[in-house]
Amino acid sequence: MKKYMTAKDRIEEAETLMAALAIVRTAELELDSKLPVLPPEFARYLIAPDAFLLIVPSTVTNGNDRSTVSNAMGLSRCDALIVRVSRPSIGAKKIILDIGIDGLTPVWYHEYRPCSLDGALHFVPDHDPGKPIFRLTPKGLTSSVDFDALQPDEH
Image (cartoon, rainbow, N blue to C red; front, side, top):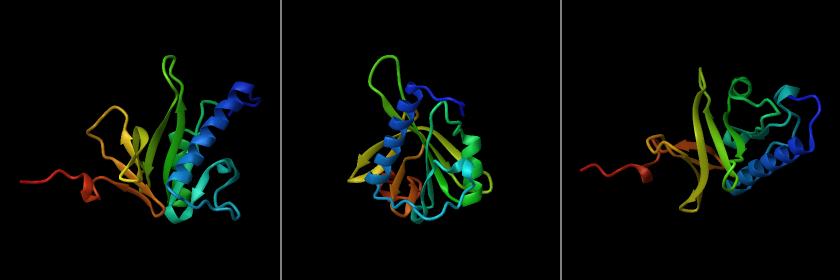
């Protein structure tokens, strides 16, 4: 993390936090407002304990990379969403997510985007249609491997 943030850095942090909070609101997650369960270096992480989920706003300047988030996942036994705002040189900004599934070794799925399917918040791969789709509910993340609605009919 940079020692001194510029106005541009602050704007990027605010946009990323707003995107993370929009995901929290859309999925109707309840955030933990009690004493933090994680060490101070993870103080900016949003924790949804009922969903076993960490929502991590990430910018270039704040150092919330997969390695750091994996450490927090190990301590909390939660899955994680790393939320970034992509700022392409051409076109509109978009929200990009990395999804970490907790386990002995966290499994990461890269470059997902949020979308609403059948009234629920889903995360779909931004570039590779062969990757799983994830659904986020107040009870946590579910992979398309685990729900029947997106499985092709077998004949």
